[in-house]
Image (cartoon, rainbow, N blue to C red; front, side, top):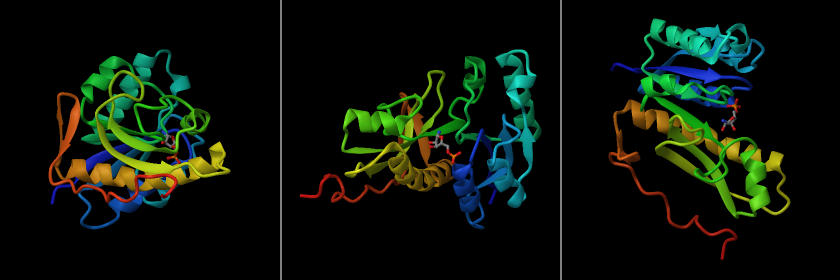
Length: 217
Ligand code: GRF
């Protein structure tokens, strides 16, 4: 079985990277992480990659005079490693449109809200401020506009009495760690198609219907 060659781009903690590393460690998982790139030399996620024996590259954005030069350095690293799919996982840089277009439908991101709600930073605090009863996370294809693009997988997380942004973020993160490996698997299995900027998934099972009220009746 040819496994899809993946790069994971990080800037920090790398807990989603860890979830992807763990998923890829199963012998029958259809993707493998060939490269981890961080724009920050001190990103703790780099150690997770090293522990798992995954090659790492640090490409510090501050070293480059312009965004285009930084993007080119990333592009070179991806090409050298023969990368087929890019997974952004807490990567805090924005690529220019040319880079995003080159990786059209070959670059995905995870965001800690049910998009299109609560784009941008502090999505959990935004959800609390809005008083929604559910939030969650979204894995989506990357488009030039931030936190936009065809949605592949979402997971729902209820807001609970006494939640603050930190407690909510912990539960959203646990959902992220399930959603991201699932999205990667569906893509690597060739089951995901983008039609008119919406995702179609072959043989996708519907979720249980009994989890949609908060509070429970
Ligand atoms: C996650 O909440 C992800 O949704 C957001 O940044 C955070 C990264 O966390 N894009 P980690 O580095 O994967 O632990």
